[in-house]
Length: 81
Length: 353
Image (cartoon, rainbow over all chains, first blue to last red; front, side):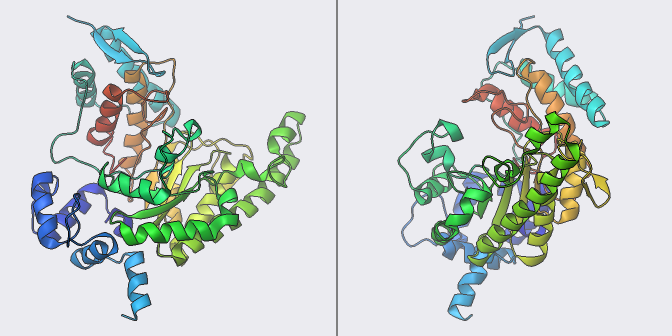
């Protein structure tokens, strides 16, 4: 959110927490976020077979946060989407 | 009461009395306030810093809920390069290093950059750089920046075609030095724009103009114009990281939007970077190796706080070897690195580091 919308930190956290349906404290909690990231399939730190990785996860993040991500747009252009 | 163990600005341990630590905190902040004509820190902020330095714990951190994000400069050089880039010489490709930063070190963003990390040497091999950016864009989740230093110095003789102001100024040839700067900055600007466009073509998430103004106000001017161009013509997030706390006036008369660039302090640099259209500004405050870390950190936070108080864009202060209060040493000790980092967020109100 800092990179796409120039949001300051507190505003960025509020925005993302809102989109993910969690509190700002939960957003900063690695235990909560590890489980949530797997549920939302937006990429996790350990190598889980079948979990979204790389550009797959980035595309899902772009949708979830309603932001434009350059490389995701490039993928869509390449696929004619 | 027991003395406080802390560090000097060169990284060596020092034992200070509680009074000496308090005096250094106040003096460091006062030094920044005098130079930048900005407010000193508040009493409760000094109390926080004192408590932090007085604590015997090796590691210090932010309060839970106050975590901030990281942007990285210098790209993956830290892993595969040599001492010249503070690298640890691991036999890793840039793609392997990038994924290591994401997966093993938990970085929030990362860069691809040329081993010779300036725009001029990266230009001839741009296609290779684009390919490496594309490779990591497919395999990683964190934002991918392409980073380089504008490094106007490489455009002057003997490395470049333009006369060198460092040779002309000692001879009193001020007009000639200014003319050389004005010519060279146009070439630098053209290269900055060209490389930036190339990275946007392949879908990079951002561009980082690192150590901006290392060669003074001419370089700062070229970079600000490149930021304007990038903000208008690309979809890249633009980060500007500075080289030093005060812009050197090798030219002395260059202005941006009516503001003279020479002599600008971080809060003034931030304003013009914001006006140019950047997404993130990374101020630098230089460490004085002859002063204590309490002095250096209080000084650095005073400058950074003057930025964050007025900023409309995220502020990511440089907190690393020799900047942001951290000692000037190849492997800065973590007892003060963690303190400087946390204090930048808690007191400096940084949006990231």
